[in-house]
Amino acid sequence: MVGAKAARRPRKVVSPGFDRFLRPVHRWVWADAHRRASKLLRFAVTEAESGRDMTRAAECTKDPVLRRIYLKHAMDEQKHANLFTGRGRAILAALPPGQAGGSFQANWFSPGERGLDELKVDEETDGSLLAFLHLSEMAGAKRFVVYMDVLGVDPQTRDVFSIVLPDEAFHMSYSLTQLKRVSPESYRRRLVWARLGIIWKAYLRFAAGMANLFGGILLTVQYFLVLPLFALLAKRSAKKDLSGWSESRSGAKASLRSQY
Image (cartoon, rainbow, N blue to C red; front, side, top):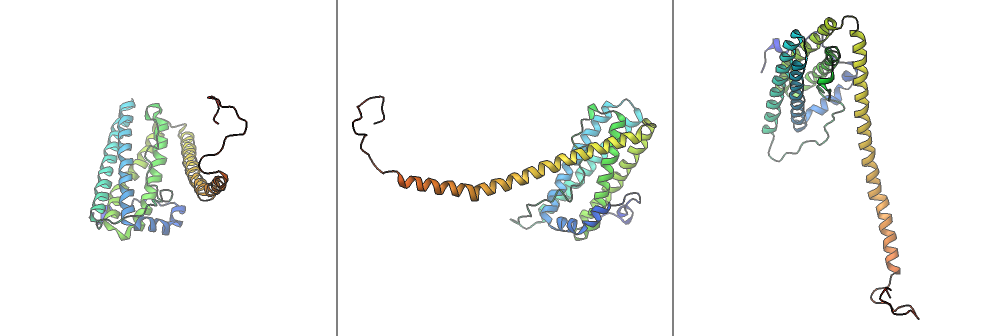
């Protein structure tokens, strides 16, 4: 359990209006213990991947200031991964044996942090990477604020987010400060391009999700409506077939090349 100082959210982090509107949905999503544990473990994987990406960014950059701060960022992400993993496993261990959790994860409503979102760190410049980091960390921090607000049912998990949130606010702040330093004249344009890239990737995720949804609906319709129709036609056709042996065609010559 963390103290009151750690539990206070950074003033600069405010949950977006859309998430505040969906607060009852978020509360329902996090109410199920099994789903809560699964989401924390998924967050841990994302944070660990982000830590590896930030370590790679530190190797690639030629800026000594960014190298040091990227390594600090990587250590923060690994700390978050350990916190989420530990809490997720603790929740699973406390569940009654054989208890099944909700299979619906509701990742659309509570996606958590998406890390670097399959960004190829090696191909990014310092400016483009910092712009993407700022937007990604800001989105993650705002979501974590919402999760803290709805986790009254689980104070220990809320305390985990209260530890993570100040680090997310720091990542959001330093990335913008360093972006202005390395790209003083073009940082606004880089932010615009980074935002467009995030929107495009969000569209691709939405399109893939809708394709899976409609594909599942179509296969279900085929299974319950089309397949029974073909089965009925096959049964009707089978009734016309004679069982057993049948006489050969009259006048047909015996031939080894003929079926009859």
